[in-house]
Image (cartoon, one colour):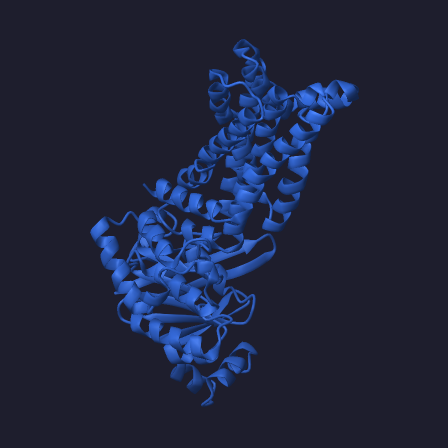
Length: 243
Length: 242
């Protein structure tokens, strides 16, 4: 009950922030439309809608990290969290209350992006629903990153680290904008040791109808999600104690 | 009956002692003010009593419950209005109050009753539908106190409740705080001498983490041999009065 009350509050705070609509929905849609327009003029295999849409959907999730990290850091700054720490709420109420509202946002965002992709030529199939379903494990990773950054950074730092650094890293190292093989070497090796490219490849395999192709990408995503969640919870508890 | 009994409460950060061997008793229904210059240890004391930070040494008993061993019970009988307003800016005033009702597990009937009582007490009926983040500092402070009172706490901590308010808003908030006297045990920290003198049943003056003395405003003025409370405070803090 306490967790649910807190989660509802967090949902309202996020939905009422105009940045949610602008970055969470507007930006990914603009990218799909823009890159599809480029693709129509200068065809590039990477920007075919079957490869572009899954990439943009995963890229859009980096904004979920920004939303949750911003909310947590603002709650720390305003002492709102301090007030709640003096109530009977438990650590689990806080962690789940911050994490749970983000997952429906992530699913809704991917649903809208894939719907626009259908309008741009993506074939309607059950694979789209499967791809939306597999957004859940990927979003866990981004939710955990939000909890992690929100626990250690100020709201201004969150803007820089999550708004600029994370979105760029997850874009460059995911193979959305360019084929990682074109760069090759250490860059490609590093990219494959991080979860972003695996999240994108997993979605692409599903959209291509190759459900068996989600492995080993799913393990990478789940492994990083579990690791990041553990670190995030520990850091959240640490800042709770530091109050 | 003693609402708060503090025994040798100490907080050390590496080589800095923020609160040093504090012992103090506060009676039920009393409004007790902690005064001191910056860094005196007022906020650290309040944070320890709220369970936000662990004491290095000593203990405190709130309505007989140990801060160290009964922290869950202590959390259910206290409430705090922090130095910052600590409201949810994106929610309306009503939603903020409803949030605190949910956090404290109040049932539907109790929630309705408390919301109605506090709306009346704090005079916030006209702003119930306004977003908290759009309110002036004075209204945010009122909301902050209403949020703290929603659970009918036995002990209320007000950390600098009128900080940054204009003279009218401060005076209005004083009326609200005065109306709590006798009903809720209140521990208040403030930098405003006039506020402490006007509101408090008793006052404690802290310096460098130590409690220098406690007494009524009149006691303190008598000890400092002056009719002016601010002057008395200055003399005591400067060590002119032993």
